[in-house]
Length: 113
Image (cartoon, rainbow, N blue to C red; front, top):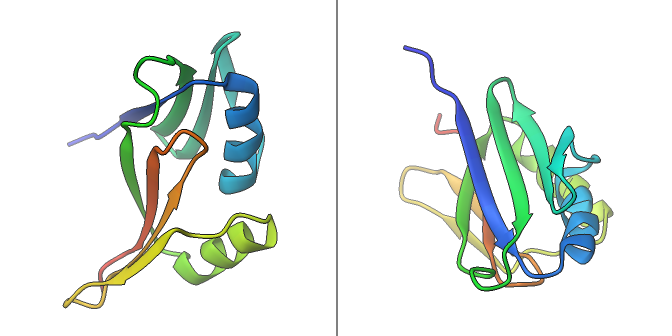
């Protein structure tokens, strides 16, 4: 079974959000489908994108499970973005949550052992 993912987050101010997401994700976008949409390939066949849609901004939720949890979270902190919450579940999975300038929630979770 092949799985591909294209998850989007609506933002109100594309330019400000672009800068914020570059810091969060640690790189410029992989490509720009048009002038108010930016796409990052976070793993093979898995993308996260932002798109300017002011009326929908701030209502998105995305969680990305990663195997390099500690180094990823440290890198985000080094780029000046602090989490809004941190959680640890009964199975030992950790999740760190960030909110973009519009209030969209982006979480990074550790891969279950």
